[in-house]
Image (cartoon, rainbow, N blue to C red; front, side, top):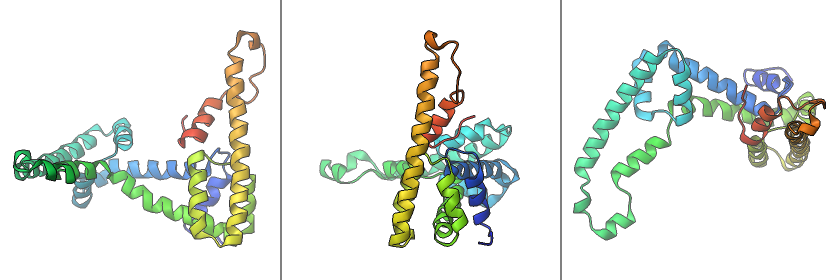
Length: 239
């Protein structure tokens, strides 16, 4: 199968020595999105308009703060907070709690609360990542159906984290024909369970190795077991 724009990163991720190829894909997309956000683009009017409107989720604002460009973070926070203040002032002025009866307060949330809830659900970085990530997941199913070599890569990979295993299990039902889906689910279940059991055994030995009775014993494959366990259990890569 000829490699295309979306198949190359998928093939690369499944070729890596990783506990979850989808975690690798997500991490790379996240890094690219953070670099874009903290690069010169944050001064462009259309991007600043979006960051003012969407804000950032806790994870990504923390990652942005780790970047060297603290001034960029300050500028985006400043204009975002300016907009938030203006919006909430207007909503709060119109929505006087004492003007609403007890029954209406129970039936619907205040416009101020709805505004804040909506703001908490949006993130400029997430919005850049999610559509591309979804396209990569779609590509996995396309390659599974069309590319025998990719099937072998899936069968021989180290498995998936629990979150992405569930995601593939769920989305495959809509993306693959029944016979293909049955084979796909059987395969990913086998590699997932094999992988997480292997890592859990390494984590168990990491724990046992800290028993004084095992002081002289070999570490086996457990030195990085905690990092790999975090990937399997929490769908994030730590270094």
